[in-house]
Image 1 (cartoon, rainbow, N blue to C red):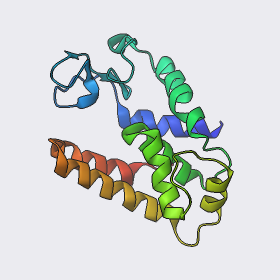
Image 2: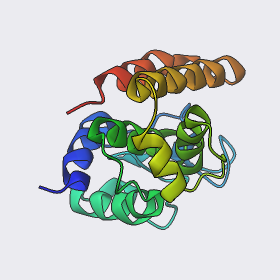
Image 3: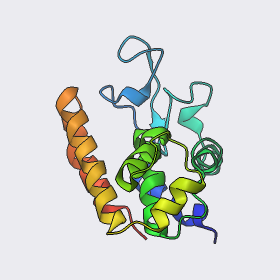
Length: 168
């Protein structure tokens, strides 16, 4: 089983099946509470995939979308710590690919361009300290921040639990 397959199994456990929560920004196509409430399935949000049939989305199709739109563009291959790869991938899905990469870049002290290239990977693999612990903490700080800025506080406990339960 390759690393993507290992990671996606954890992701799909977190994301679950179909949901149509009107307070979830990702469930709306065409604007939060002004567009059409469509929903999310396996974490594939209507907001970001407006042309997908969310209600009838299969797990295999969700995996294809994750690989094409998250895994491959994030370029996480070459990072030695698989648990860290899982955390970065999960954060990229939940908060945006660029944010996930910029967060690890900031911790490593390299240019925060959101691209996981050779310099970033070298810095990650040679980090002086516990990068996994530091990255998980940075995720939590971000979630606490956005929960305080929008009507997302209802999701905070789930987001924090997700960080801790994201492991092999």
